[in-house]
Image (cartoon, rainbow, N blue to C red; front, side, top):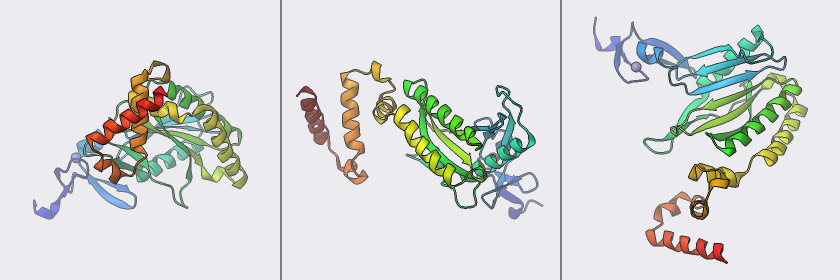
Length: 264
Ligand SMILES: [Zn+2]
């Protein structure tokens, strides 16, 4: 009975579980085996949360883990979602389950990315950004998001806002997806234009970098923060290999140069 091949390794925790008790999950065309507790607690720390906005005013929220998802009515919406809205939300959740991928930046840190969509996907990425919690930048991102959602809905295109987890408590991924069957070439072009227009109005890369690196809004930043950002930008613009070779003296040199250029 307990021969080796009666057991499988849980995809979540790596524990051995009997084949009878393991839960089979299909993901990206592959069958994964998951133990009961990994499956049960999967949604306790979700990978992604989304809100699907329908042109008729209905809204469905979703919560996506590694192996499963749940969708439910957004009661704050003006209208109740119809059955079509739920089926779109389920389609989106399946799409996310198949395409969410952990990107490690080092052994302890990283973020979830949504892989680029292929021809057969029903969801197309409209825009992508990062939420820096409790910042002025995130307030501006919200205005940008609201603006784009309203634009897409006015074109009768269902749109979903997806928030993804990172290892940093203070930042999350932000992506906007449009439902492809509602799109055509003209809408596609118009939306591209609207995204560019809205980014110019609400997004500011200087502000974003300052807040991302220092955790401060621009009006709280002091000289030292600004100097730090200038140096970080110089380092980040270099190829990875060159960054690895940077010495302590190189850094001092860079700091001196930046201080000179500030004081000029
Ligand atoms: Zn497990």
